[in-house]
Image (cartoon, rainbow, N blue to C red; front, side):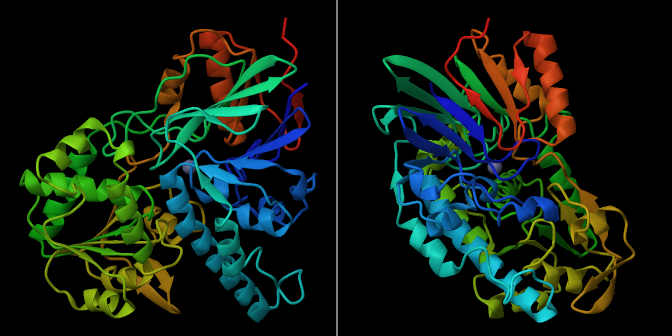
Length: 468
Ligand SMILES: [Zn+2]
């Protein structure tokens, strides 16, 4: 009888890993890193409850590290099978896994210096060289066609609208002549967003795994473009700079799209825009190349002669550290986008140190700011930030724009679920904090009357017997 084991994203939003077994074969869906609290991160160091060498294939929903960041470790521990993803996801993983390895190495070096690691000497979870090795196991599969993995497993990917390449998956399992259809929602995106297509509606499933990141809340209403225009206009008039800490994948490209639109409609003055993040620049190139993911509006723009609708009128991409430092000398109004998105590290720290003390400037926070980050401190009205060993006074205006999430809100999750034309035999709630999981479970039971389970970490379920 086929079965599924929840090796991650059970009761939490990170570490997505689902093991599906049928006919003596093992397929892993997603291979994410646990992130956040220490006790969760510790799971990255625990051995998996099975030998990675016994896994036959890995299949990915999208490139985010909480869905792919454990891959180099899995390979290091013996996994030798193919890693199946579409082309865009493979290209993003090349950047993200090497970056993740680089951060792991930095953390290990820092721990060695501070002498606080439980490993002696402190080791990275994996090295850049190990991440590089794992990339050789990637194999591209079609964006939206059936792909047969083996006699036991075939997959049909659909647009999930979350980031470039993101998919929800219809997995058909065949065992003893019986077919079982399992739908993996992956991470679902939002409707009517720029660049990417909307999430495709599902139709049927025997079993469903549904993400619940925003299962308990909706995103604020209101026009992103209008709010963005207001801030930029106001800051330009007083001669300041707008500094935007931004995630390299997705958020930066969405912002560039809005800025281009506002400029072409002359809703903002023609300020120079600096994209100061080598990773974001590379990701923007990947976003522009993968036309198969672009929605109709974006395709129209491309066809109207705007070869690249992410190409701004006066955009400066700064890859080198020297060019990055030159932005510090600018005294005229400008817009600076730089990573990281919560201002926990990266070049954004230099821009904040330079721009925060001047009340003409503004910092625009465009994503969720976790507890303990510089972004959160600014959001909470901190008077000073400690940057590079100095207390930097916060005199710049701080504005939060939280409509730009890449995740479906509660109503959007329910909208996607309403596509099913028959109740799944069992729905498993995954990828959510306990409150969000519970709230969405209650929502599904009230609205659709489906049987719903919230699986525990490492719990297994048969996917064979019919309920009722
Ligand atoms: Zn994601």
